Image 1: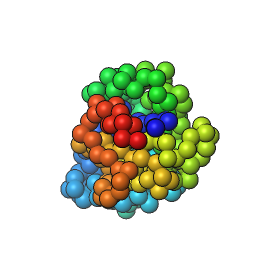
Image 2 (image 1 turned 180 degrees about the vertical axis):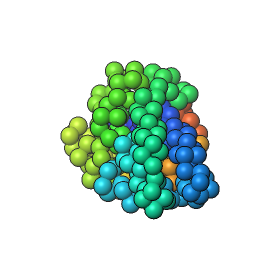
Image 3 (image 1 turned 30 degrees about the vertical axis):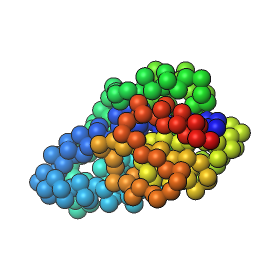
Amino acid sequence: MIEAVGLDADDTLWENERFFRLTETGFAELLADHGDPEEISRRLYDVEKRNLSRYGFGIKGFTLSMVQTAIELTDGRVPGSVIRQILDLGYEMLSHPLHLLDGVPEALEALAGRRLILITKGDLMDQERKVAASGLVERFEAIEIVADKTPDAYARVLARHDIEPGRFLMAGNSVKSDVLPVLELGARGVLIPHDLTWQVERDDDPDHPQFHRLGAISELPGLIERIEARE
């Protein structure tokens, strides 16, 4: 029996990456004199990857990475007015309305009565803001915001809530963050792909008996019922 279900937040329950892509387009337009959009995006991605260990995941780290990329692309000659506009792009992201993905309210209603834990990573204040704005807080037994989704991070969450890994299922849009770490612990991992997924979060689907891929979150309640019927 599945004792508890973990759900990712960004791009599983609500839109996230789409706003990063829109901001990246605006950033490339600001620096159009210093490279084509593809090159600017590549440079920004490289800087973001280097900075993950410094700033972690989230809008604040992304904004700092845009500033750093602008400095590097211009050999330190980026005008203060452009830095100001980059900061404004970050502020706009932080104030952007939250949009639930299709089928989320219905899926959570179908899962009512189960132990649901929202497990998300990123900047604490920003994630707390989004969770509060979602209107979904009452659906979850607990909200866990972690710096990164590693096997150790999941193990701590499960221990905190007295959940055996073999009776836990995690669902989200990232193989790297929502599937592979929990499979390593002996839990089930469910991929619910989003049409936009950040490069850092991509990985191949694992060949594992406890891995499942769905087409939409609306399919999750049925999957859980089928798993339990076989056990």
